[in-house]
Image (cartoon, helix red, strand yellow):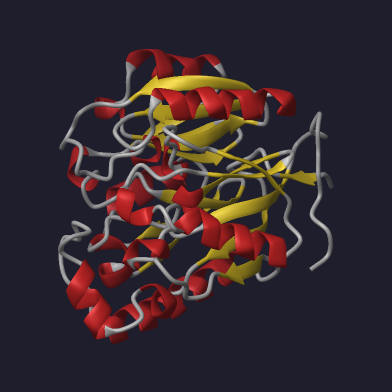
Length: 307
């Protein structure tokens, strides 16, 4: 079995997370940060830690062999470090460090670099200077097609740098304009409306998708499961594929779950009242997948050294 980086749906072999106890740290930190960071409510520390333990248990229940690397506490990091997806991008040459569009999160890529180096995961490049890209705006559609959302968190200069880094990996970059929706302070990413579930299956919220991108998915033979309007704000569209058609989602979106299961997916849910709903970050946000099993051998592949 070939393993590599350029997939959102292959069996997950290695990923990075940040436990709530190391992101939220203390009641004093929560009191100082939750309003400036635009959380919908103040997280309860003890409840968040317990929820996160169960979240990890749910991941491991789907695949007991998945390797989980935990980010530690670090200087300059806010509560938002709970959502490590946004600080890096995986490609077949290694990890690309992002340059966060949200100023309060600028320290996160360096923290992830340190963890990657500790675990022997190569760091291939970085978005720098005036360029901004967040990992929630980036998703592999297939092993040779990377989609990037152009919105308030990811700008044109960041996309230019990302394209230059991705092309040597034998991949094309598809730019997807994002809607204004709730404005610059909102955490709207491409993956707010798209979660790949299998090589030919994706969960989407079509009312906020641009037509050319939706048509591209259909042209690639990808079946679309539609999130109902009443479950979009509760992050019904934020679903993590742990393996093809095997996924983890936030509890409280029963119709989306029913539609996924009707499409052939195995679905497990977790309670994310403190760790997901209040910070608007579901299971894709709370995980930075690194290695996955691929369908085909990648054109360029750099495997990590043993930890």
